[in-house]
Length: 330
Image (cartoon, rainbow, N blue to C red; front, side, top):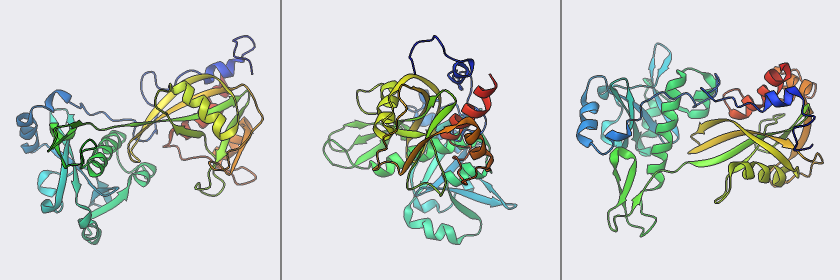
């Protein structure tokens, strides 16, 4: 496929129009956070403590990799008032997430030793974040705050020691920094950028299958951005490494916080400059071209081979669905 504009079809041009210029598309999991993060308060422990003490303060609770919900009328409630927090004697880090209106929002980590005791209490429910995003039981804006809290608390749980001298580090700035107790080195939370891309050749798109996927499931290709690399170069490199396809024009379409444990999924389309597939069998067990009608069947669950695509909460699904539903109607 040529990199020049001549000969490009209207549907391809429509396909390369970003999806998130104003707001995330509906259903994109973890991408609809609305908290005012109030970073200016992180160095004011007196003000944050005052927010925490108000009756309007609410807390998201985590234990290990799970969110903890309150059972109420057969529903799961994510926000806890201070007096509702489980196992108050076994809390580890607490992070100030920001404000909803004027009310403070916090994330609390319960010590892993309490996990089995939590499971035994009927008033609580432990649930993984993927399952939580898939079943849609919580408002979209709460899922954004939960992703924020989960990523931050995972960082604390895995960075209790200084990477410079190996001594213990302590929480600072309401959870947004750790400081070494020995050498005073400062450490900050990290986010790992991941490119996730749909390669397009006219009316076809490239989908791959990992051995860890559910049976019949095909998705976009993906990989971590490496140091010193642009997003566009990462898209082309990963596409070539995994499938042997040369990439041309790249357009960043959308992005999604992905708290597994702390990534940002950067969704893109890339135009194919070659079409012969050479699979990296260490990464994929299959990779092939699918035309729009076939992908439409995969989305609808009517593919003759029983093939399918990821759930709608993932950015991969949005890229695939946009390829079929929106660009085709241009």
